[in-house]
Length: 161
Image (tube, rainbow, N blue to C red; front, side, top):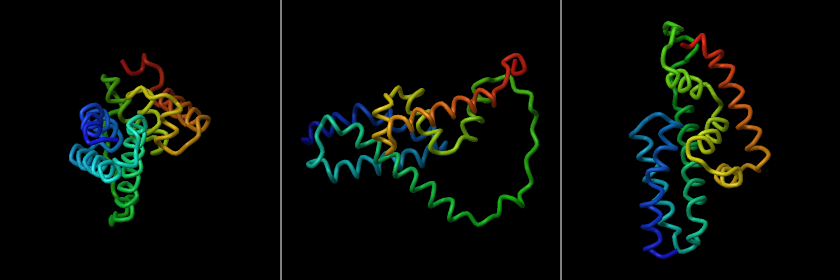
């Protein structure tokens, strides 16, 4: 890949990558940092990567960097969450997007990631497999399980509205 092609990758995919990371970690600053780290890693290896493979390589880097960050943060947690009081809130919601976002937060990391890549970013099963180091059938199973969970979490639409 040439430096010109690298710049094209930055222009084409920076916003997509940011949205994907933001939807997963829900922190704008960390998402920006991860985007920057991902492009830095791509830049270090740009001579070894073909232009046609750069998109999947970039999203794989971002996905793996995000997972590493999440694991690091979990290890660094000092407070025991079991001792923290649970915040009470009304179960009466009027915003379906809010309910969907709450359901996404409850999904396991891998299910949330593959679901977001498929439904929010529009990637194929094969591309998602390359990004997340899973085979296509695993990707399909995780997406199915995530959708079933969200369907059950949301419940009947009449109860929501």
